[in-house]
Image (cartoon, rainbow, N blue to C red):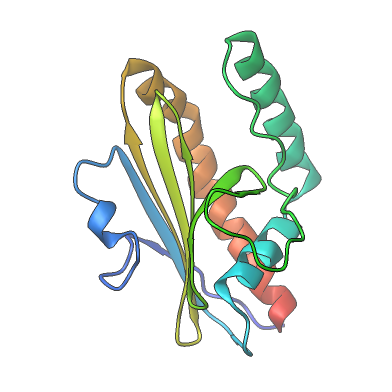
Length: 168
């Protein structure tokens, strides 16, 4: 069985999110060499969302319930990526809103009064990089990130490893 070497690091210099790093409160990236085989960045995002385990959906449901009690928005499920063939900026794709889309890179975001989250999946040859940059706007945003930070660092490499395992 092949072991997929997922490397956790900062976004590469070629990352579409690299210009967003200044002043970020949270920065994380993972990359892995795999077989692109013509897959677009949108397909990579859909493939990653399809690998979300049920336990994570349960955590998202708890998060959404708690946030509703605090008057915050319900993000829904990460798996709920719409099947739109040609999504456009501003359209929801799972828990994020599409910011930009190119064959090699997709940038998704969630922006509210507490924080601005940007997630990018980007092909660099046969290497897939998943990068996240978060700018917190206030104390609630920083508090919110306390449990999200370690969970994000756990789940993203896990999802990426599951995804590329399916690529073969």
